[in-house]
Length: 140
Image (cartoon, rainbow, N blue to C red; front, side, top):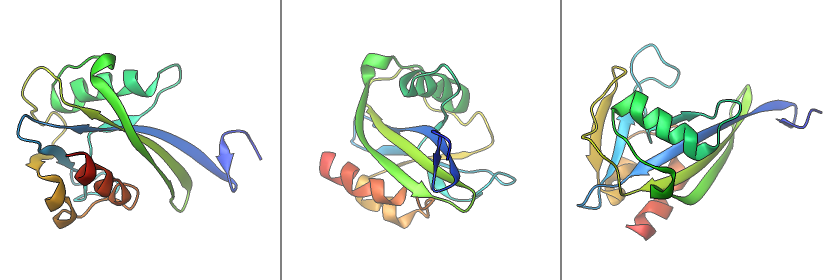
């Protein structure tokens, strides 16, 4: 088994961000039609590219996906998800960001919504994201 495999499945490293507004709400993005898991709600973020840290990934992804800027010092690690899908194993650190510049605007056809942590269970999410909700409820 290769070093980047678990149980014969490749490991996919994805960084996610709980962007928190001044009201204590978290930004969720709905995956657009045509994408895997379309219609499900998730935290903004994306795949960590070779040579990137998870923080660098989030700075890039937040800019590309929702048009906001932040800095590595504004990203605080909270927890992580480890979930096996059929063809890969997802490892996803979740960061919290309360300091960012700009107003989130969908850049990739997704729908954005500010949600209170206790209401997140009302939004269908990918299996890897669901276990992260209690950590945000406890924090916020």
